[in-house]
Picture 1 (cartoon, rainbow, N blue to C red):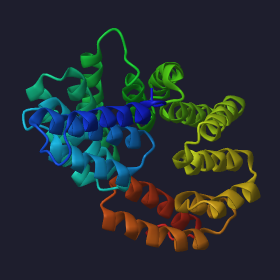
Picture 2 (tube, rainbow, N blue to C red):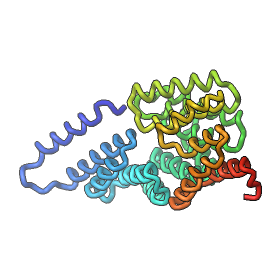
Picture 3 (cartoon, rainbow, N blue to C red):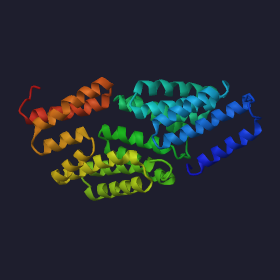
Picture 4 (cartoon, one colour):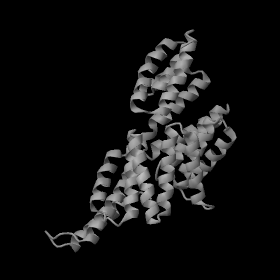
Amino acid sequence: QTIGVEEKLQAAEAALALKIPPNAEMDEWSRNLVGKIAVARAMLAQTLYQAESSLVQVRRALEYLHPDNVAYRSTAAQIFGFAHYIQGDRDAAERAYTESLSLAQAAGDHEGVLLAITRLGQVHELRNQLHQAAEKYQRALQLIGEDPIPFTTVVYLGLARIYFEWNDLDTAEKYGELSFQLGLLNDQIIDRLILSQLFMSQIKLTRGDLVSAATFLAQAEQNTRQWNFAARLPTIAASQVLIHLYQGNIGAAAQITQQYNLPLLQARTLIAQGDPSAALTVLVPHRQKMEEKGWENGRLETMVLQALALHLQGDKDA
């Protein structure tokens, strides 16, 4: 649950203030509690993809937590990694997740180990290291066991994406469905259900089932707006573009790509409009940007579209 967390943290701070005399130094127990409160606030910010707020609270946590409080320090490292992950700094994210895994193992924190392994799997995915990512996710499933916890949604969805990339649509859909069903149990807390619905929309579209694809997408958009997960609106828009392109509604697709900053889909729409030259004008600087950031998955996606646009231009050697 996320509702009511901040109020409870404020109540804890108020109680702590009554315990400590004015101008007195905090003892170890009190300092450690301040650190725990900061970890909780960082986790809350993480659910809303507020990277800067997460980092502020994590730094406060690390300043106050007792050196022996390894479990909380592991959680802080994981949140630190996730903040860098959503900022696009994958190297920093991987370092933090690796530290989090080491601390969680030292603390005997089963859930912390599971979380860190899954997060490392996500970094492997972004680097196109799909076999390493799948190995991490399968290891996470082994740790979870027979009774899946809500976080298992993330693991199922990671495996669904990988099998989709491997063109094993049956296995991808199986994991996508598991993710969707489990996501229904924690729908209002974080956007896991929305991500599962978006994946199911994608796989249904790939199979040519336009009705199911549109239904899943409509549900995802409704949940996004109802629970104010604004960070997901561009992803919703991207899925809408794909459905429009599939239907041949190229004008509607173009309108959405102009509204949102979606360079790859803008290029796909331009290719659909029969203008590969304009598509390359978008793709060349985007590929350069991906290479500068070291984003392997974005670079690969861009190169595929570049190849298509060049081929349509008749430049088959390029």
